[in-house]
Length: 487
Image (cartoon, rainbow, N blue to C red):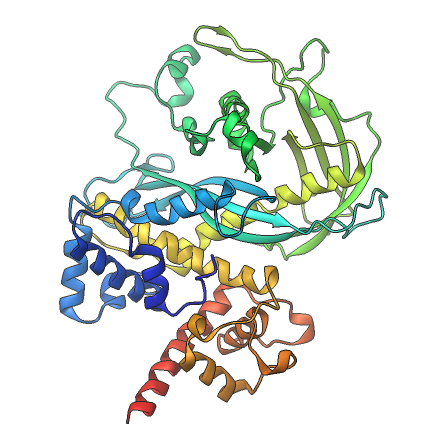
């Protein structure tokens, strides 16, 4: 996603100019709409992002067209990301790519006039569900230390590649007389279409043969809701690895034991992970005791008979010396990654810790882009707008990661643009080191300072919210600079 720092119009051209909407004029309008939303991502509603009535009316007409849907809007981006992940993109293969999945609900309950919304929550609200698969590259694991004290040896560099897959749907009304899902017989539930089938559905079309010939390794990463037999079967059929947090205490084949106690007798190892801030909890570095073992969970019953067992590894991580009043972290992870050496177990735990990126992404979409404030008349139009905001949200998140993944890579005049570079230089002076050239780290820190980041030694790297508050201020300063130059 090297287009992240482009000016809004250039970024929109790179992401949307090849979208096939049946008419070139629609694609041109899509690019203009995306540029406006990228310049003002927190606008929340189209009237805020498009103050000119003619532009606003054209956007409504575009999003209301039957020829425009979310899949068509994001198709060029998804195609490019998939080619990149499979080793055909500009960054090539030879990497480990995490496919991080999660589902979120978008709440439009207060928009009573919007047509086509479905049930969310406990069926008391109205909205849409969004299931996203982010492609994230991890590289530069560090040295091959096998000792238990090599805490930071395998901390990987993380780079956001983009959307590998995304699905949006409205849950239909519950048929009259049909019981809630938890009261439905298991045999009946398994014979019909279920929302749980979304897990690993992004792997449709991939085969183990194709992955064997690829120079890039793919691993599906997901939380406990993905712990179903079909997820394992789909991953194995596609030749894709997995790191999934266990939800079910599965019985093991011919052992008389279960998954959650399988690692109890194994030697304990030590690893540290950085945990993000959560409501009521500060960000912290957690010290974990890690145990690992090879297991073979027994296959479950499915229509047609009993399924076969699945061989995999289990990694249990328990936090020690958690802060007072904080529930200690405990992850039980099911994986195909090796576990023979201490560094192998550390890598499993630290790769799973990257799952927080999908939560940050959905937060970007809801908080950064204020998608739930949109008041379009139909769920179809909302879904089409969601396609644009999905990529704007990626841009928000990737700006934060660029300063960490590629800190010393220079920023070109084509990326930030001459006006932005001139404003940053006039405001903060020439960047220290690098011969006065702006880099990802120095430019994004400067932009974050415009958004309120103090930039002191102990403040750490800025988050996406601070960067994009600064970005919006920078856009206003650039407009003033351009007016001054033209007068």
